[in-house]
Length: 414
Image 1 (cartoon, rainbow, N blue to C red):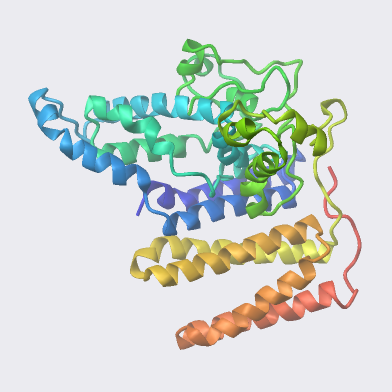
Image 2: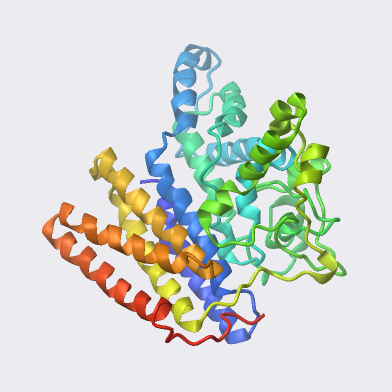
């Protein structure tokens, strides 16, 4: 079991603590719809990882074994039990991560994947868990330089997990600047800059653990007292559906490639600088940027009853995700695939409920009907549990969505 999977319960506890403080102090950091949207993207990212091969290790391990005679001749010996070796491994990994992260902001195809992490218009600990699922498996390229220092695969994995886990805590608005930390480490202050869409903040502060790389390579920007961060992306997603989140930029590039008359642009726009669009495609399909002088977060009105329903469904999905991740190795690949598909479907439909999509009420009934149809294929105990859940949810949803009995109070106020 990976360190990241082991850390998930602690992540969720931290989110609940921050949420409780937010409600107690009246900070206004959390909105239900945005938080569920971020957490759903995180769940989708983790569960789809079960059915995708770990490409980095598939390539890194054979190359490492091939180079083993050279490491032995150069007396390159690493030990995970040596804290200095571990610190050096994390620093080396973070250096590679910096360049991977920077290019993800500068190249269209890479931004299409990384964009998911930036779509939230709130900034809290749930934003840290908002991760992509649909990217091309090319991240391994950026970590191949670690072969030059003979970093063993097990230390690569450990350093990567530490790097990712560290980044969780910096996604908060209530940790102040600590001057000495701002020079060395990624902190909540300098990472807030990274998530802001203000012109002065865009494409800055790429480090994962160490901010030193940004200072060395000219991409550092301090958080300014007179320039409050406006979070999100200039071309907003306007949905809480995690599938739509992952496809947003891919869809835009595909449409541009289809509609542009330039064959050069059709093949090169994917690798051009982030935001590049062929002039004819942009003229035919303009996508306006949000107005930062009059910024309004996406917050469609949804009845209180449907809001509570979506929250309860998300709790169910979260409760199913943890055992799925822990016991996935005991399942066959087709079982994993079916579990991932059904869970992903639930997350997608739940997002559309929070979008107040006009077809969401039909999609949710169809999803629950599918679960009832599949229930007999499971062991008896699970059959009863799944059938009971689907039937109870269907009755509640019918009452909320078709019987016109839900109240019409808007979901969230800012």
